[in-house]
Length: 563
Image 1 (cartoon, rainbow, N blue to C red):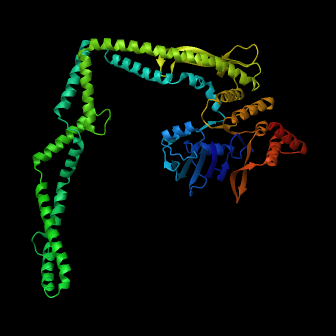
Image 2: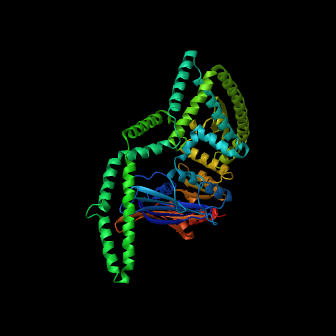
């Protein structure tokens, strides 16, 4: 679950430090107090886009830090599979710093990319925003919900379908490439022969590109290298007067003569002797290097031509960079062309072979898709009943619900099913697609109902609802509150609301408010005790004027919610 949210220097936030608990965590506050900033900060930490000008003070770094405590061993194992180092307590800390428009993401102290972070965070937290219920109108989302509901029965069937579908379409693609007359076949063969011959004639060696590039670099720099090394040779010693070698030799002779009268100079004499020896060895090494480095024109021409050939072959044939070595990629291309030649030389036989393979794959795919359809339809019957039950508990007293199935013309990685949620919210009305019936408030309740059903199946430990209560009031609001409380028995729930019926259910109640400090507007968030929570409920109930009667009403609402 999400234990702590720490935000610094972001939008209206100077610094906030929020500690959430199990159960139902409620956040309330006046319109414009900064509730959306809190959720926005969490989204940024989870890998979301960093809006322009979001940093409060550009001269300082902005920081969002989330601390999770992972209870589930299964979830810990999945996180470790994404290279997340976990301690024995299951602590996971995600931090995102923003400095000078650039951000740095760390997970338990290790750097992470945004793409890799999102793979992790989708396992940790599910955020349902004010407009996310609109996704429920998409048939792809509806199918995703059904498959999540049926996950235990589906098992790895969808993975089998995806793989078989890949094979099926690959075979179809290959067959379409061989849809040619005899003249086309001959032209294709001639082109393959030409490419294979060109590669074979090059007599390529693995690792050759790097070797030739180094040789070319050396040749290109040879003039400069030789000039520099000749100068070094002149300085160290070319038997001319004043060279380093000459001076060290003279110094050695003088010191040797002096040491005949003072044995204490023997150490210096030995050092000078070593210097003279090193100098002479270095002279010889430089001379050998200069003599060996001379390249003849033929060799230079060969290296240039070879490099040019390798470059042309890479441009033509290194289409798929399967290996680090360019030559291996070129040879891999040649092998593919050799295989293609075999198929073209026996075209009719290959076409028949492909047709048989396609038919076999189609049969296999049809069986797998039929199995998936059967499971989906059986699960849809159960889901229909569950949704009607939960909708009744959300004040849809006469709702009917059904999941309509259609079969697609072709196979897809997701099977052949196309489904659509159908609903009737009033007696006597026909079942119609969800998008033609439900209002925004109704969609929000339907999504909450589905979340309630899925709560027992979902491994994500934390759910965030950002004003899911939009467009509802009265008895309906009370029913939504009860559903949120029900979900919070299984998952940690964090909810931003403007309805007192929901806020009264809080296990932990936070107040978000905006204030002016040193002529600067900033947002803060505070946990409320029992009396403070009653005062906030009274504000939500009574508006600007809070009377004793309103406060008593709030106290009664709080008391009833705890029963």
